Length: 146
Image 1 (tube, helix red, strand yellow):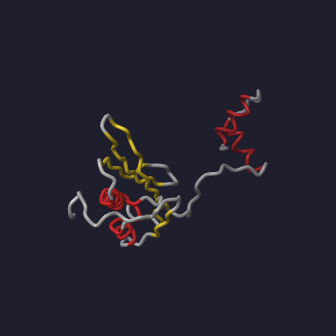
Image 2: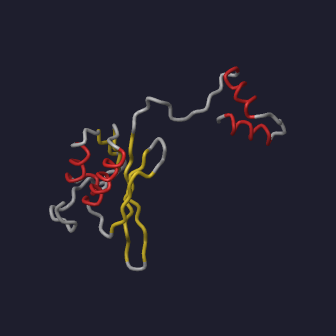
Image 3: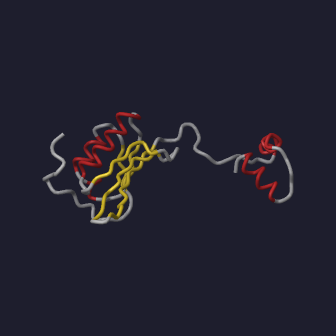
């Protein structure tokens, strides 16, 4: 907890104290808030969410900065193909630069060469967790060459 949250917790327990006083006392007691510190590695995560519609599904692919939890880029698609994942990660690269690590699950859209090449060509490390077959997409694509 930081000084603000700690002050609210103390007030709930009937101890009325100001935030500045709590901030002064925290180092004396050896307390510090846990949060991302400067110098931590920059990690982006990608995932696909399935959204049910009246006739089938649409897929939301999003790139999230892990430290700030900010959505850097997103795309809604009607097919689950690697070209959509490639487009969304390239959009994030163009807007925010290059992270150290890109983390995904092992979905077929993220294990396809089209996507992995786009990430590795930027000089990022590619980390994949989760369980899945790790199969690649078919060689044909409804997205067209871009």
